Structure formats: C-alpha cells, structure tokens
Image 1: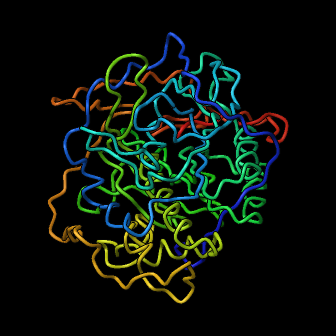
Image 2 (image 1 turned 90 degrees about the horizontal axis):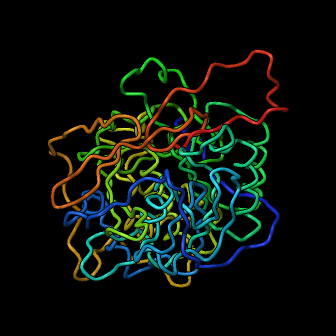
Length: 420
C-alpha cells in the first residue's frame, strides 16, 4: 500500500533453467573476511519481531523466496539445504549463485530463511521456506562490470518468476527510473509474485546528496517498499523517507549470517534498509504459506494492515504503515483471508510470551559509515567493507553515484547499480 493509500502487489516473469546445486562457494582473494563469532544472545531484531510466535501456525512451508543480491554462501550451517538453486548474472567478479564475496546476500538470505542450529541464537523468519540465489550485484567487483546493472536486475526478476518464486527480495537500489526494470516489475505483477524492496539509505555524512533522491525498484507502484526503524520503532537515521514507503522493519544492528570461507563462525551485525526488507520478505513467506489462495496484492495489503502502528501515530513517509508484525500477519482474521483452515483469533500462541511493549523505549541511533559491518563476537569488532568502484547499485550503506553523462542514452548503456 502506498502512502496515499494505494495497494502494493508484485510479481515477475522470466526464462531460463533452474541451476540446482550445493557446491562449495568459491571466493576471490579480495573477498571480505569472514564473520568469526557467534551472535550475541537474543539478537535485538528477533526480540522485537518475535517471529517464533507465528511458527505454531506456519514456518513458511512450500514457499520459495528469490534473493536478488550478491550471492549466498550455501556452506553456512544456518543456510545448508535452504538454497534450492539460482543463477549468476555477473561476469566480474567471477563466481556462481553460491559465491558471495561481500557477504551482503548471505546476510539477507539468513534473515529470511536461516534454520535454527544448536548453540546459536540467530534464526530466520521463515525457516521452512526455500531460497533462490540470484547473484546480480557485488560491490567488490574489480572492473566497471563488477556491480551489475539494471538490465541484469530485470533479467534476474524475470528468471525468478520463471522458476516459480512466490516472493522476491531486492535489497538493491538505483536512482534511475529505467523502463526495462519497470517492465520486469510490471510483468512480475501479472504473474502474482510478491516483490519486496529496500526503500534506500540516506548518506548520513552528506544528507543533501540523498535528500531528494527516489530509489528504484522500491518506488514503483507495485513494489512493497521497506524502511528501517531503530530499537524503539523510531525512523532510523540511515533510512530514506518518501511517499512510496509502505512498511518498516528493524534496520539497525541487525544480526545475520555472514560468509565463513573456511574459518570462523560466520555472523555479523549491519545497518540499513537492505536488512529491513528481508524481514518483510520473511513475513510475506509466512503469509503465502498460510494463505496460498491470496493474491500478491492481498498479501501486501495484509502485511500493511496488520503492521504495528507507527510511533508517529499514523501512516507516514518515514515508516509507512508501521512495523511488520509476523504473528498478526498470519493470525489476524481479515475479510480477504482464505486458508486450509480458519486462522485463529489474535490469541497468543501456546507457550510463547506476548510481544514487548515498545511505547516507552529509549532509543540509540546507530550511524556507522559507508559499508561498515560490525562482526558480532562476545566483544563487537568493526570491519570496514571496501567500496570497490563507485556504481549505481548499492548494499546497506550509501555512496554517491558517478556524475551523469548528458550524452548517454539510457536505453543503450545499462546503468550500473549499487547494493542497497
């Protein structure tokens, strides 16, 4: 649903064969270091959302979520067996869908569908959903082609639809309203796939550079655009605001999986709308599993209708309809709900504590710099992500695009994106 009350639905179309496999991921020499530690007990985002309250009803069974990102480390214990296939849309750096040089895609995938493992407090929202890894962006590319472009993004969307994805997560943004990307999203809508996208990040150091920006594909009419909130549901200072923002989720100090690369235990905490969006995608997977007859539009409407109201009191350009609520999304009785069995009233799931009262939380804003990862150890370590070349697609943190070339034709030269 848009800020003006418009509904958001997403779906995609594509062609190509599914590449199945669980091969060990390969990594270039300039890949990021592994996340060496286990997450601190009770990651804050999981404490806030409490997705386990929804698990007696559904854990995302029968749903496939496509992750269009930097790849996924399929060797990670939390993600072993969760990725059922994928494809690579990058030539540089070399690799396949199970290659993740930056760690961005592995973090996004973990938030959506990481399974529980003994001794680790982190888990995904929908651990019985399955993932498609579509490697389309990489901020550590060694050449101009390393970051992907809008054509590759459109192709990845089409591929996801062709492979039967029920939900598509795009934690990547561009400032270019490209007709090819919009066409792919529009085609997706016709195929009844839910598309969730990060709303985009502010340049905290130079806010004037993003103050008037519009980020795509989040800004398209039929995409569910996700903003980030802090620990008290307040708008995160890293999150971009705009009339296209539909809903929000935790986006500060978000713990998730991180590539292991043969050593360490593979967890990190990061900031940005990139990591808020997959929480909404995970809840969308729960809803699609529980209510398989709902259209993509109805799924999106259910997510915004059942969201926890914004701290500002009403829908707004900073956090949309409010913070996604996993339990309410699957348990609330709405006029459009249809499922194999009637969903319960908003009673508490057996043996699970009620959600916390967030009305009086003290807030501490996190404002890490561009590309910063905080590796979660017993003592937090700061690891700076190299930016590689400046491109138009970006991951969790913002860096400015190159100057526009007035002579360039948008149709002839695909725009280079940045992860987002």
